[in-house]
Image (cartoon, rainbow, N blue to C red; front, side):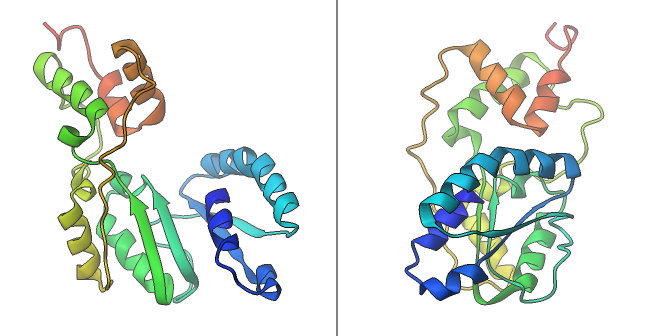
Length: 208
C-alpha cells in the first residue's frame, strides 16, 4: 500500500484531488490484516508527513476470488505474489475485471518457473531427487508457476476481457544475499506457504 501511495503521488494530479484517493487492503484472514496495519503504520506516518496529506486506507477481510466490492469500484488493483496461492485464479481475474472501472488496470506478480528462479529450482529439484514432492495433506491447487509463464499470464487476462495486456519477466533478479543451503532453506521456510509445507512434510524415511 505504501508503494501504491508513492506511485499515486507521482501522477501529477491537482492537489484538490488528493483527499479523494482511497486505498484498500484485502486479505482472507484477519490476522494478516492486523499484521499489515502494524507493518505499514510507521511508513504511512512518514509518507503523510512527507506529502503533507492524509490518506484514506481501509482494511477489508474477504476473498480475492469473491471480492466484497461493487462493480466498477476501483481504478487499480495490485496483487503481489498472491495469484499463485489462489485455488481458482481465474475467479480472481474475473472479479478484478468486474470491480475495475473502465480503463482500470490490474497488476500482479508471480514467480517465474524454476529454471528461471534459482532458489526454487535448487529446492524443488533436491526434494524430487532425494525426498517426497507429494506431501500428504497438502491442499490441491493449480501449478504454482502457471502465471510465471508470460504467454499464459497474458492469455488468461485476455480470456477474462482485459485488453492491452503486457507481461514482463524480470530475469535480472538474483538471490545474492543467500550464502548456503541452510540460508536458502530458512528463506523458503519463512517466506513461502506451499513450498514451506512441502519442506516441513519431508521425513527421514523419504530420503532413504
